[in-house]
Image (cartoon, rainbow, N blue to C red; front, side, top):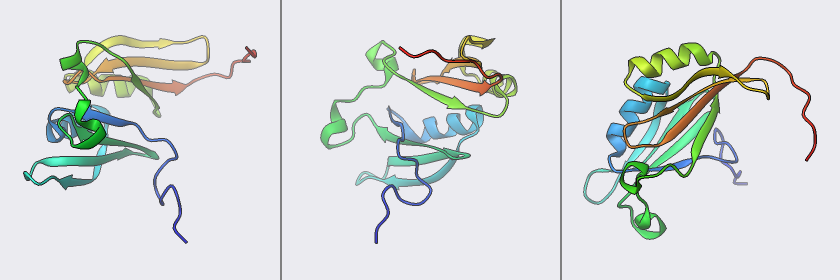
Length: 145
């Protein structure tokens, strides 16, 4: 029987649009520690889809000029706005921050402690995607809405 999601894939996986998938994958590896799981070339020979992973986290990348529903996509840099963010837990937000800054990520918020118990920093990659990385550092009682 076919399992859905397939082995090694989370039930929810960010699918981010980039003008240059290969450059994005290289930056995400250098700055944020992702490793390429695979890449698929389109008819023109350029990478049309890629999957990257870091620990149990998986992200997928597609081109902004992809066929079908994604053809309307634009990178945040081209759109001129931030409309979403990837929020990801890492072992050490401070060490992760230093790596990202050294790799050239644009830092929007340096590591800080939040009221909900996370230590978080936020960065933007070269195509304008917003990334927030956190380490849960203390338990906090959460009240209902």
